[in-house]
Length: 241
Image 1 (cartoon, rainbow, N blue to C red):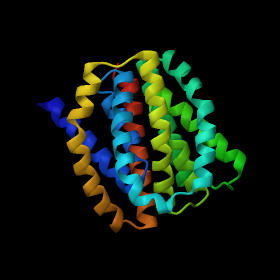
Image 2 (cartoon, rainbow, N blue to C red):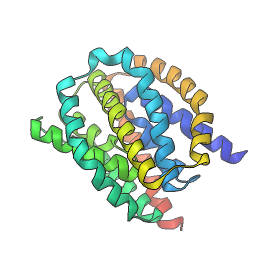
Image 3 (cartoon, one colour):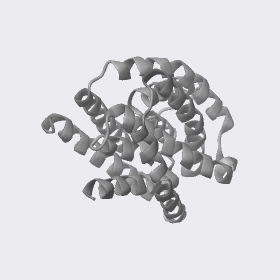
Image 4 (cartoon, rainbow, N blue to C red):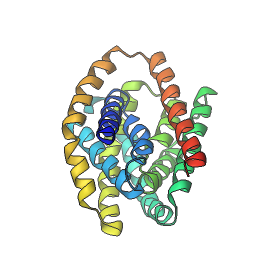
């Protein structure tokens, strides 16, 4: 019962975040799913459920997508995917958690310091490549996208729509790649299918939340989400052995 409650809470909150912000599912779900599943199981569950959200939302927000930027992210990510697989295959669970936590804390610090960068085609491709690498290695394409789009002062509607559209591609490619290389199992399929109705509830709540959140609140909420998840995972990786 406790495990089921934790699982439902993780998926519900992550779905609300993904729907309302465009990046929250993997950042929230992956670290906490590691409490319940093996790394490759947690990543695949995260990817499957994120795909469901992206497919369901993309038609409603397609008018906000920056298609030129999306194309560059996609092309860059194709180069990053195989390198992510190599990293994933050689990393143990505690190192995995530590890397994710440091990544989240570093991202939070840069955002709080109001990291700014000018958008260029090369940087678009580079960010896409890093996101592709992180998707297949740790199941989290969001951090580099969030840092870059926030650094270029992208409006929340464009950020949400473009990242969701990118997820639709990168999660699909990454899922096929991971299944082909490391396989899947009944635990992943059962957990993913049993969470669909929770995801739908989270999407409904997330849409309501999105309409009420302004750019300033969006930014503060981002800091809280990233830092709290990063601190939890860092402590867990150090003291949870």
